[in-house]
Image (tube, rainbow, N blue to C red; front, top):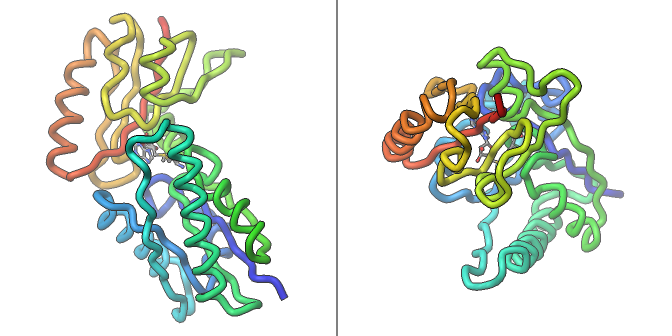
Length: 246
Ligand SMILES: C[S@@+](CC[C@H](N)C(=O)[O-])C[C@H]1O[C@@H](n2cnc3c(N)ncnc32)[C@H](O)[C@@H]1O
């Protein structure tokens, strides 16, 4: 007998982003494993529970909250992340053995899509070396798709590539062509030339959604101000933007 795990992409904010395939997997699940996410916890955990309540027809499923191991602050970034993943994998493996029957079905709900800046699949690969599990992946609507849909724009220029990157890498490498920037705590777009076009979105797909577009020169400071105010008001922020050279 093998325990089965679904890794379910739940979309990046709006419960309407949940796909028919995700609904099937939600209804197949007995135990949902969730990490304790700190500051954004209450809103994001509430959304996950709301999705389960809305789409699962037969109650009887359980949530198991897993404590998130501390990430070393003084180690080199990649070393710290690797150690953190190994510690998470140990916590997950123990919880799967403890909480799931040998033929049980569990799930991890991944924000947006599990393939995009999400460590669930990397950690599960390590878990699978410690406990016997099989797992599948259900794709979800990413923040990138939510952003382009809300601004009603194509992601790429005709025949052109798009880079997906982080704020840190944008600041270090600069912009060539088009780039989607995620995980940016510092408004790294301000390092781009003023004529660069920007389409920015925060809390996409939620009632608190914010959208701004223009050039970095025209709207850069406005976005920075709006972002700081929203972050202070909510206690957390998730924002994404697309940049293009003119
Ligand atoms: C850890 S990554 C997860 C991405 C996710 N797996 C996805 O498919 O969108 C978190 C980053 O995604 C972006 N993000 C996720 N949800 C968002 C939302 N609703 N609105 C704006 N940005 C979002 C932000 O850049 C945030 O820093």
